[in-house]
Image (cartoon, rainbow, N blue to C red; front, side, top):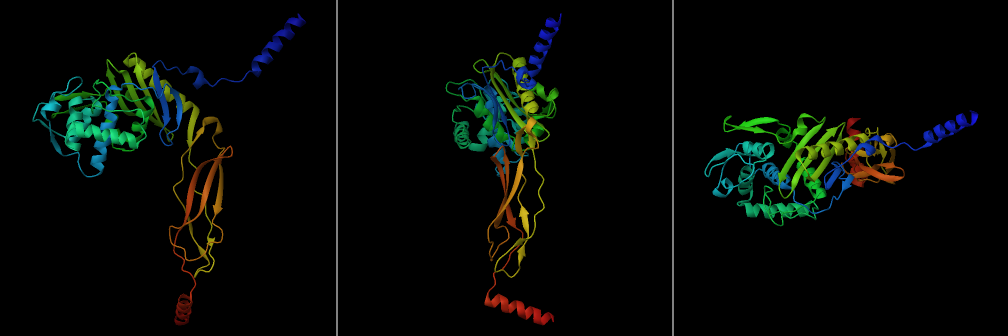
Length: 377
């Protein structure tokens, strides 16, 4: 009996000594052949599965179309109120569309609604033609922009994602262009809309992204499905300042793509956090050979630092000043830095700048100073 109790006790102690398995890691499964989870602020990849495998991505293509459209709006080339006219080419698109007729006019706002919410191929072409003059010219711009963003595995052949030979990308590249699109805050007005309409209510739009009704913190972004690409999604979400991008390519069904995207986002939120240090109080900084003995100091924008949930609060802050700061000093001159390290590794750096000018002491400035003092006396 004693031996049995001792054996059971030893087994219990051994079990307690086993390292804990993170729940978020153990429970996450991705059925799709290619996927990636990226933190939007830093671009850091938190999970990947065949992330650089070249594949079709269906209407996820429209993420780049929207990037260029919002760039055109930001640059003043387009406005949301502009009325654009559908060409014969735009009206000829198949697949998902809003049945635009040649010569029909629609506002940029409604065309973006149709492109985002209903994934309308014809609406995407109208936007493309009006940004670049033709879909062909627009596709050239898409590929140029992809190169600028470091999308090394992407070649666009059209602006809407219909299956076409050579129209390929990767999960990682989709994450890169999704990261670029969400820099435009306005996109969320469309990606978070469940139902809307165009043509004064005659054409109803229902969002293809079911996650916006079921996933906490979801912000978008785009779905896509074709026979060549399978079921795809780029899902974006934010909680407590942590912004994530989950890309799933080639899922077997629409339900599978949503399950995979949710699993990826769950994994990210369970395992990671963003830590934002408070701006420290900075002293007046001594200035050599200046008309004033000190200058005010101002810290730049505080960083958002990605850390594992278990390591929150372990960021070390250090302030470094420029040695022997000597006049003249101009407002905005870098006079120091705040460094943030984690486990001995530099993770962020913030410049400290002068708040005001400090003139150097010269004969003329010294004489002027004396005269001003004399006149005050």
